[in-house]
Length: 337
Image (tube, rainbow, N blue to C red):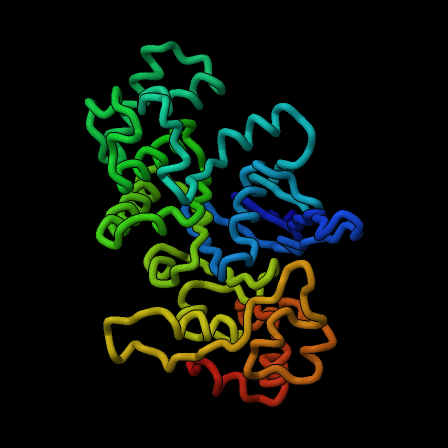
């Protein structure tokens, strides 16, 4: 580890699932996550973007230990979170929390809001009943909920209010990192802005770091510091928000950004329509996983899997970009689609 330790560091995280397609057929492996690495600094937001099925939510479950990785390493402030040690398990439970996508499914309908919020304290701390109530009411106030909401059930709330409750539950143990798995995708557009602004305010106030999982690039542009673009279990491009939004290099990133709606006509990009379907994770193509849909694919793309290369701090896995750089046209391509 280097002298400057990131708050959270993932190294080549992998998650493979064994599946059977029939009674007599052999088991096959689905590589849901196939070697993802990143570093997250304190107080920053890493956005993980890509189409459904690219492995974003699997990454979120690995970071919060809902599932264990098949391979790879995960460090919190230099401490190995994957070692079988009660202290490490307690540390990750308290320091890394998750906010799920669906506020209608992630809250127990049989429990009052007060009980839902106090449950993490009941399991992980020795606080008295009065202290737990005090802490719950304080967090409720932070997320814009009123005292009388304490005694109510989830069905009495709107989607936006339920997501505020879910965020409050994630903050009960004073975490350093919150994994937000599509936290606003189930909400009305008018409510999304409120919840996003709340998350950004809480980040400022509490020094939180976010891993923000989303398919909506307009949301990502609002909240992210760094962006990681994933395709079929692998990272294809990673860089600062400015690099990704102003100078997208990978053809997949360019296509995603071209589909993002823009109110300002000057900021709109020429629409790039991807042909073909997302390949099956059970039978991924040889070479680059994006080759069948890529307008810039050539022979090498169908034979060899590209690895991430660093171009001035922007990580890109694309042979077409490599070829452009070698031919000296990389600078001309920057900022163009």
